[in-house]
Length: 297
Ligand code: SAM
Image (cartoon, rainbow, N blue to C red):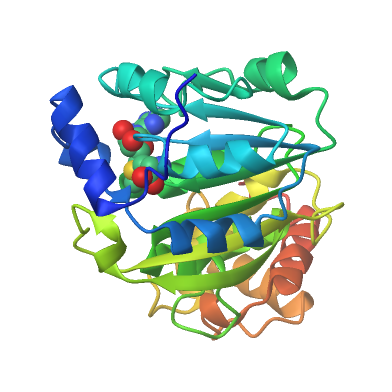
């Protein structure tokens, strides 16, 4: 059996590109990590041990996968690019605890693969250097399905990471912060320089940690409707919630007074902007909405 060295070095990565005649596809967000230190920091933040199951999105040539396979019980890695499957067969040949799945993460039956491969793991983490062009749909899709995921340590474009982790009242705070913080406890792990990727991306990067809450942060009876309501508060960021909510409800302009009444009875000043409302205040507004059947989501 051949024992491979670290994949995440510029020399090794370039050698593999050449050996397999591989060329990067920008449209798939292919920026490979060539720095083992960064990989180790991602792994440290993920608290991986021999009972952990990992879901990786986009293993690329296996730079992160390889280091996780050394520590975790099992890794399942979803890779859309068929050209990378033989490369991964080569680079990960020494591991029997890695399953590479040649599927689009947005279309795959993740629950099925988790049951099939990770049901004997004590905890399950999503750890990935994500394809940046679909960061938000990937995370929302994973969070909003009933999957046994304990947390996420994921690299993404800096601005998106800042939105996930944003505090109320800041510029970055918006509907994405609310969805993420509804399900998870968010924190920043580290900023990552462009120089650790091949090729370097055009944007700055950040690693963010999201740990699933035992219960969502607030209680609402219909998550979809709740998120529709919170999203509408930010549809035009410079407008007041009163104005933004007139565009949310059918015939909203004509229901201006009812909307004002709803906001007033909820104790929320209609002149406030969405970015000043905490998730608890949004949940309160949502629950009060039941008293106003004219305002249907
Ligand atoms: N993990 C590798 C690394 O850090 O070196 C590669 C990370 S690269 C930023 C993103 C990877 O996601 C690429 O390998 C790309 O082919 C893959 N990818 C892009 N879209 C995908 C999708 N919809 N489903 C699964 N993988 C995808």
